[in-house]
Length: 61
Image 1 (cartoon, rainbow, N blue to C red):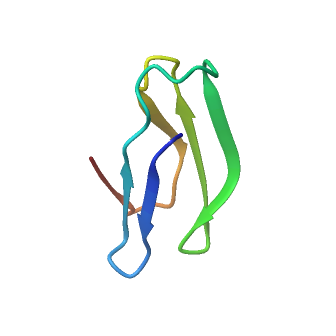
Image 2: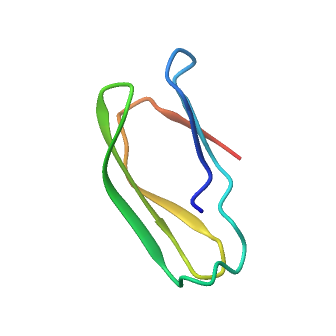
């Protein structure tokens, strides 16, 4: 539902959350991308906000 697409070798993460998900707000914590913590919050409208990520990690859409 969050549409998280990590590419560790490139140092990027793409977020493409599902719009109008029936579950309401979704918070994912305790994830790891390229060995570093990663957390994201997705609103019920499908808007993603990264709450924790490694320094230098590039976010794509």
